Image (cartoon, rainbow, N blue to C red):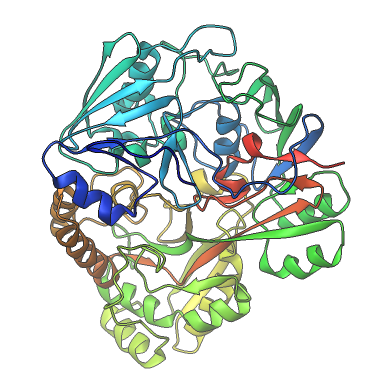
Length: 527
């Protein structure tokens, strides 16, 4: 949605395609600004109704569930945290930056940014929002002891300090045009200055946390003093985890829950046939990847990696596993919907002969049997693994699929064995995606891959103000990943959510399921 008309040298971040915005920014004295907050949806046909209670089932829940934005790692964490906290900015339906706690963010060089905070915002305990809260929230990610999921990205913050009673300045180590979008990420939600105890949460978000029981449930109750007048609409939300997809769908169809994420494509017809529920599909950059650790045997062998990539029958995976609810991928993590997607990389196809050739060069021991770990925790990885296993058997490679329950998969199997599956949620910028999962020193580099040229390009692209040059850098980086990285990416999954037809106000924010984890602010019950 568009906002106030721009004046003078100020332009609205959501009013222009980013390409035009970047061109404006290169002009002397140009300013980046944010307009008024708005819904990421078109205007609602019905008037929202205040009241009602819903239960929401996400894909996982465990004793490591957290209210700490720095520690969030799963969809349930993100949904819980967006319920109780607010960010300086918010995502819209195009993953652009809308204003949040920041009324305005400005910069004339993309290195030094000035953030003007919204006035009158209170935490759930009545404490006013101050610059100190923002400074603390952002800088804590740089502390290794915090073990933040955003540690790598936060290293860009050279300095964050108060510059007025309602203003802070963020100085980056180098120019980054994407900062307003980065600040909308769940990890950068704002907490109270000095908070270290996350047994409960005191935020500025649409719901107050009234019960948090890790592995069991989170209950949020409507914040009557939310800084967006009239919102939220529901009186109470209970968030739980149901790891088994069929059980999650059963709960939806039985009316035990009113919203679920992680719907398997095979359940779509069943939900649609119910009459009382529907499926909401959001095309996205979400992908499930085969992770081949580069510091283990035999997956660290480049020929083994290429053999596995040629064994993937992507067309068959798209057809048999995703039932068309996905788009073809090419071992590059940037989806075709991105304006930085490189379409010139030749599509890698299923080629058993080439796979056989590279397996011979990999010099595997005779009769070797390799374990491939898959889990429902990595969306549809079990089904993908079965197809890879079948393809491998046709070229003489014995792969054993070790199916692991969702609970504990990410801590006990993922990246701990030579062959596992990952599940990477969409990132709003290419820089965030590459910095988090592909930079050599990132703690979340899935396969332990290191490439000096890639790292060099990543830093250069981050501060490149000529958009065409930036695009060429991202194109080269995708080619490097495609050719050399130990990840095989077969498809970009559509995000499939199931919901009760009485639940209104639901839309798409393609950062993840549950309306980009932000459903709590927007939905209401039509009874």
